Length: 245
Image (cartoon, rainbow, N blue to C red; front, side):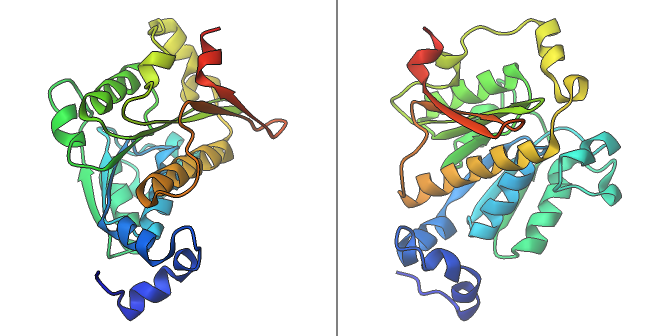
């Protein structure tokens, strides 16, 4: 078993102090790899916390560039990054936070031709995308590859968070019907708006789920969806089977 350097022991001592993670769990994190699909609102806190936790390899997958309107909620980017591809902007922040992390910026959108080739390289996938087509593609690909998938979505003051594990239901089992173009447009953050801090809550929960998967700690949101109402700060957990009733 690899021993920690003095710097690693100091950097990660708050995780190592947790008996549920300890030395073994921290080493698992340092040997692990996570793919984050999207580099926007949800990905911003998720990427920061995964990097701070010492995840060994983090892929950032997005084909978009930073715009001024992103900065209200996509806190991994700054005004100086406007016009830069989002994966490159995010990678710069990750490296500054934790130089020991290998970050792989992938400046393209996932599609039918590249999704399996890209996602098969990673232990856990976080879906931080903002549209149904990508969510469906990520879900179907993770199912075929038997990859754990942590999902979240935002709309106005509401968030959804779930984790899907091999052998159980995935996103497309829960949401099998594709929304119309008009419905998709009406749900977009750019059109309906979104409370920026809500992305911090949901994205952080995705990172926590990924850390739990990697370290084998705690109870996952497998078969359960957490609904967050930021207006009232009510958290509701429902069984996925209830969604179909």
